[in-house]
Image (cartoon, rainbow, N blue to C red; front, side, top):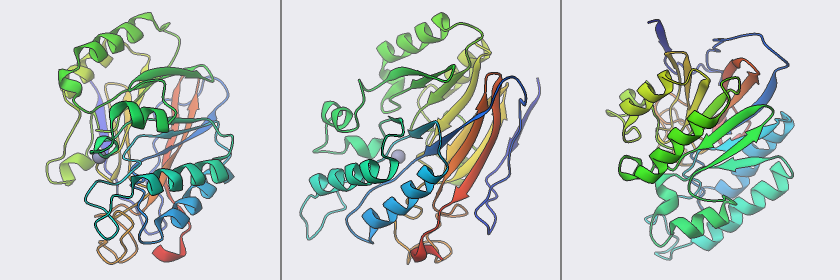
Length: 286
Ligand SMILES: [Zn+2]
């Protein structure tokens, strides 16, 4: 068994080390993976989110994946007033004006279910067909999980097993979850909080060699691991230190070693070509 891991090590340019685990095999295409937007009405977050999504659009990706915590939690209020409606509006406006017609797959984060948010309402507002779902794009199958309470969700587990069993072996599969399945950054982040049954998932993927990529968020740390032929990419965060510059580790918006940014990923028919974490241009974080 061969495995290796590259930790985040994001350098001053905002670029992380690239990983080229399985080059070749068909025309490569670009997707963007963003996570942990934590949209808030303070800290000029709505306008800064638009800068991030504008940078995404300029890359002309085939697909954009958001691995959750789109909204910030209930403790984040304005003068004690819950402002979820304003946050949803800010998110929708940023997506419609900046991403425009780019296909967008959303996953649920833990904060997307903070009361008074509900599972059904958050799915609806994020345009999701359900809390977990499959979507095919450019010959890949994307399986979007609901990692909240995953360890107790036997229906979802059975659905995932069925998807893996029925997907043709020649079809590469990407898994999307908010909580990481495998992550070095989760260790750095105070012991980390992985998805429930992560060991079972790692073992399950070993039986289905067409599982090539797992995307996640939650830690706000960008890291890249490769284990048993699967690339595990934890996507840092768009919000960095939850949009707060003063509390950030470097005075430029970073959480620990990871600045605000997103993953730019190249895929081909045979697997993951390249993963790169990029900072986006934001005058507030210069
Ligand atoms: Zn989270």
